[in-house]
Amino acid sequence: MRNKDVSAVFDEIADLLEITGEQSFRVNSYRRAARTIKSLTKDIDDLHKAGGLGELPGIGKSMAAKIEEYLTAGHMALHAELMSAVPVELPKLLGISGMGPKKVALAWKELNVTGLDDLKRVIASGEFAKLKGMGAKSVEQIAKGLELLERSSGRTPLGIAWPLADELAEAMRGVEGVRRVEIAGSLRRGCETIGDLDLLCDADDRERVVTAFTRLPQCRRVLASGETKGSILVERRDGGEIQVDCRVVPTESFGAALQYFTGSKEHNVRLREMASKRGWKLNEWGLFEGETRLAGDDEAAIYEKMGVAFVPPEMREDRGEFDLKSAEAMVEIGDIRGDLHCHTTASDGTADAITMAQAACDRGYEYVAITDHSKSSAVANGLTIDRMWRQIEMVKGLNKKLDKITVLVGCECDILADGTLDYPDNVLAACDFVVASVHSSMKQDRDRVTKRVIDAMSNPNVSLLGHPTTRLIGRREPMDLNMEAVVAAAAETGTALELNASWQRLDLCDLHVRMAVEAGVKICIDTDAHSTAQFDQMKFGIATARRGWVKTKDVLNTMPLPSLRKWVAKKRKV
Ligand code: DGT
Ligand code: CA
Ligand code: CA
Ligand code: ZN
Image (cartoon, rainbow, N blue to C red; front, side):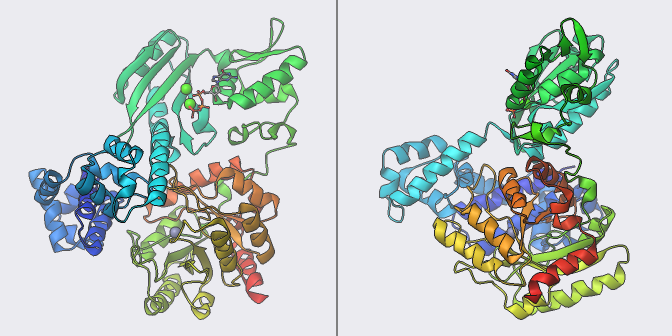
């Protein structure tokens, strides 16, 4: 499958066109094509052979010709041409928050900046701030963005680490003599970024299993290979690298090792203290009283012996989890009855509404809300009021064609810079479910952004505040929201707060989500899917919710449809 390559080339073309000052509609057409191809479920080579390239959404004749050129010749002339016109490292600067294409071009043309190091130099020397159109404040922003990029580049986002960990664990399950494999560490705890992966194997011939681990086809470099533990470097699907540790333990210690290597370190320290207070010893080999093993093969038995409720991995952060009577009420993926935020080709998604609804139905959902962007989100091809009225009719009509799922008419309505909404009330009232989100002017000061989202939540038609802080993990800082005030307003107005499950966002984060549910606010866990495959991101949201101690009853989209409708209507009545 060369889908990923083609999509990467289109993304690079878009980057390069932006830097060379191309008009935005042209840039966007390449971005859109890249997105479409990335989320294809079919092999692009097959599609090409069948003559179906031109039928893809957002792929016109000239775009199809470029894909064909790439598939047959192995390169694209336009790409090569742009590459030779722009220094290789330059597009990386676009990944820095605050560094738009105009500023990248400026730094390049005026100060001969060709990469990260050059940029750091001209920031430090003050030359960058002196350029016309720059100024100290915007350079300060860029310096912060640069720091953020460097800080986060060592860690891997959950959404990239998780499928990779699954793949490696599966590979280890295939090694002869291996009885059981589990993923431990921060991934098991569902952390938003992962330092390294930790695998645990149950086997007798331990050194041989370690050797098999270091010989996995995914291994790029062996960092260490011992009698019981190996460490390797593995390539990530986004081109980066991640370290993977693999420990092989005997059966009688597997549960203790799983507990130990799941962490967190803070949680373990606390549990070990509790053990020593009883005169016991807890380590990665087991729970011991003198020489007697009290527990070891089974993880749950360790908690049981210690006289505390089993702590789900996501809650092992020393945030009060040992006082919990039971964690059984925490939300699980099977509790989710629908997804209330997704996009279609009407705005910036890659599949049409019926395809998205069918995909939601395939996940076993009872309902799905189609929530495309509103008119001011021009980059995302937001719907004008006229188009929105037509969309409302079209989406309603889908219910005649689909009988196993209810499709709710929705929209993701922009919260404009002044706190007003992008659609008039009559449009919003015609929707079954309205998500209101900020997509612009995110750098307003604390009071302004806070008042802005609170104003939006006070509209009775708004059921959900979408991705409340607008952060992009490792790429964009959250807005400077007063979260206490936002949570209080959500409680008062009867508005739900989103836990956007997209791994780039995870917004709200675990701690904010916990704040919200403690205040009695409903959380809605949505994938914000822009393709059918992205509905599968729900698990990242569930992990984050559990880290935030969210119970099933706290989650809006665990309600059966009639209750959900009643909940929406209640706010609209007052
Ligand atoms: P990461 O990899 O930075 O995302 O975070 P973790 O939590 O996966 O950390 P890692 O890979 O260094 O270690 C895995 C687990 O092993 C960690 O969560 C707890 C346990 N562990 C590691 N070192 C220590 C230690 O010095 N003391 C205790 N109590 N536990 C440790
Ligand atoms: Ca780790
Ligand atoms: Ca580790
Ligand atoms: Zn959005």
